[in-house]
Image 1 (tube, one colour):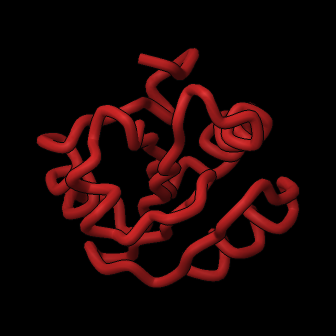
Image 2: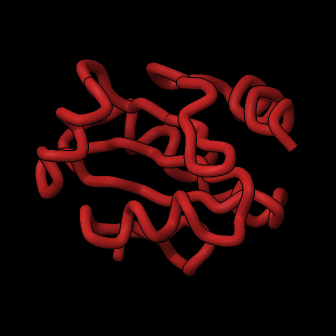
Length: 110
């Protein structure tokens, strides 16, 4: 697990569908790679937001370990945050963004 706590834990392909369809209405999935510098830069932002917005479930998908999911969601640039609501994709944030941008986009779906 990459995260310091369970608030923004890395998940596998098998766990993915269960998480986006679970009791949390809004889920943010961070598609990343360990070699991606912008991904590493936003990781602490994702961790902080996971603690600040407990109504939202934050997860991480390593695209190198889960290529099938990366292809399914047409991930061509990373970092790529996909916001799901009620199991359906409602928005994307591509590239390294500020905490304010990410937070405002996520909170729009609460």
